[in-house]
Length: 122
Image (spheres, rainbow, N blue to C red):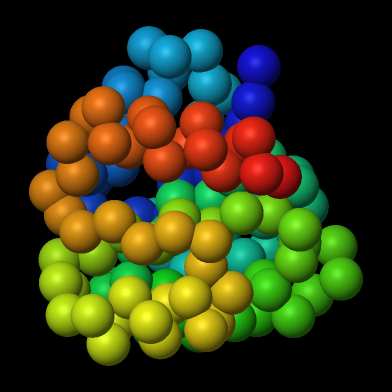
């Protein structure tokens, strides 16, 4: 069973992602902001991280950059999730260390496929 950390400030989105992942056999950890998500990732070493971009305080780009630069977490695939659909946002996310970028609302099969693909690569 893989462990997926969700860093998401929207309770609705977090609930939808959690249900989809748990229904597919994943264990889910949840952080409602990046300030909690970054230390949780360092402490728990999840198999995959789902990272929202727009959050109060530290945003998902900053959190991804920090995790990608940290020795203990740079190997963890980070899938960024955002309503931002511009190609420049996707490119910037990948430059920060994200392994994938999905535009919200993310259909359940697309989310599961992205997580499964990240697990294969990891």
